[in-house]
Image (cartoon, rainbow, N blue to C red; front, top):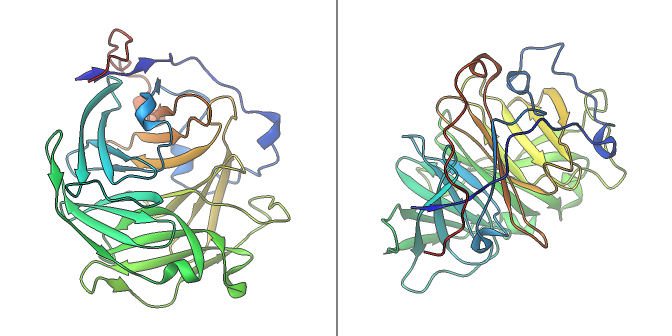
Length: 301
């Protein structure tokens, strides 16, 4: 097991650059209200091979998976100890695409490309090359995809749109549903028009970059990297809240996942440096013992 570099867990203040977000979570019960985003329990720098991490997902038994940006390689990361556990590839020669999201459903691992192509494979051991299937969805004609999540209530994957290409998708967050049974897009897209009483929307619109379904409320948590925001909406289109992400801690948030114990995990691309993972415990769990630490190192495998 190769350890990541521990960057400490010092309190972080929200940056003025994102202070324009309107936090509505205090008024309504929400998933976002569960977390103090200024107090991570741990922060880790990722190895250089994951500098362009684009998505996170948690397995049913609570293990964290992330993926490369341009190759079909999936990594397991121990977010509690800050350790790189394993990596396996889709295909004997890793599949190449612009991968933008990952999800785990029914014991299988799914990746999605910016063009809306869905890849499916079984999880493999370290250094394995696993067979995969790929499905064209045509979602890429309507928008650029940047986010994937599993919704067990509908037996579907949620494909999050970043940049609309169809005029009718402007002015909203748009989510397509891909049926796990039919292996095809199911129904019309879910369109969530902006609510300016919850979030101040830039003139160009929001640019979502990651999505996760909260297992308690069923709400969708959406990160918007360029806007420095974490958003919460219901599956039927009601905006619940918005929280700013400190740029010092989250320069470009691309991945979001919630563990079975409700730990929130956010991943940021490294840009010119190393990618980061921030770990946030639910407020009621913060009084417990801090996570175990390991000697910081970044030994090559």
